[in-house]
Image 1 (tube, helix red, strand yellow):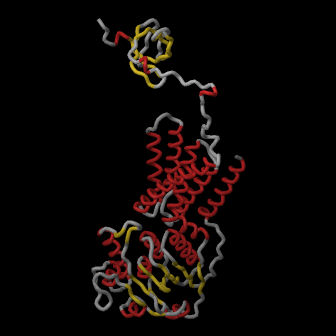
Image 2 (cartoon, rainbow, N blue to C red; image 1 turned 180 degrees about the vertical axis):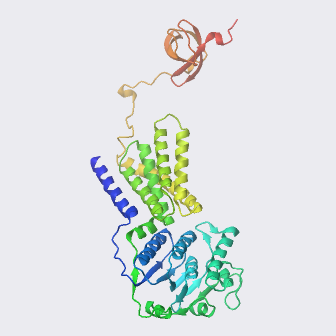
Image 3 (cartoon, helix red, strand yellow; image 1 turned 135 degrees about the vertical axis):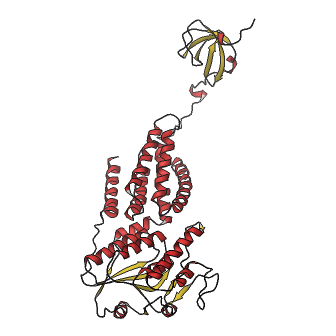
Length: 444
């Protein structure tokens, strides 16, 4: 057990250092250099964490401008909006560099920049939103996202109709899109309609076009914490972490102890909540609510039946898991899938370990056989309806004389003194329940 505790302690220390401290070594960008901020892959909370750090580095090192390099198929709308807010707080020029694709939320970030440049063969647009795993969004969400795109276009003096056509299939831009298709622009088309300031090959060419010739630049690299946040907040990874966490929790509750399953469960939940908290998607009170739910379940485990503590614990855990996710819809899908998989995992795990005898210390395997001296208690159903007399007072248990035999009995809840006539009211297994005879109709 001491070895398990030490292992658990070091795991928690590593996780805390990785997710919370943010002191993972990153080489400081030299001052007075243009900062290159790379938005690569799907835009998620990890991208937000990286963008915050990158723009802080640019500000601290007095960078004259930022090149926002975009190579993304899109991602979470709320993450893109958070990055746009980070960009708005930076009071130096931001030049978007589409290299080679700024699709969906990536197009939004390009529109939010002060200027946009594209490499030959690059594309921008196709910004129709959708719910992850739940199909198309409703009209309310679609209208909101369209206005966000239009607002960014208007802010930079670009044609808002083109931004609208990137979001809605029923918007048509003559010569560029047809009804039923989302608008996507090539580098040449973007330049022709004013959605790009130029087509360039590299950073130096971009800086020359932007009026900063021969200016040095430096790339702000991702930190390990940004990668971990992006990894743990991925819905697929999040579902796996929840499955492992819930599966381990189920195993620990059933086995009535604390072991490897409990440690694995804690690590999985720590990664899930730690990543989402580090990404700014959840506050610490969500984690506190989850821990409170577990405590309530533990209290319920030591109480007979299933009541307020059990229900309250489950509700608290469910609410915490859903609120920690990138959206409520995503959280619900992740929770349902992970719970089903965790149940299957727990069943398979018990079958696996049971075959190898690993559960002998928690499962009673001894059999009580007649040839070994075990005698089953007699069937008491024949006593139903018999009348007798109490030998001892029933408070509520005691003894009574029934069928000329001394029988252990239980009253129906009332006190019955000794030498009182009784009748057997019902029989539950070996439990004989009686009541005073005066409570029943007596025969004439």
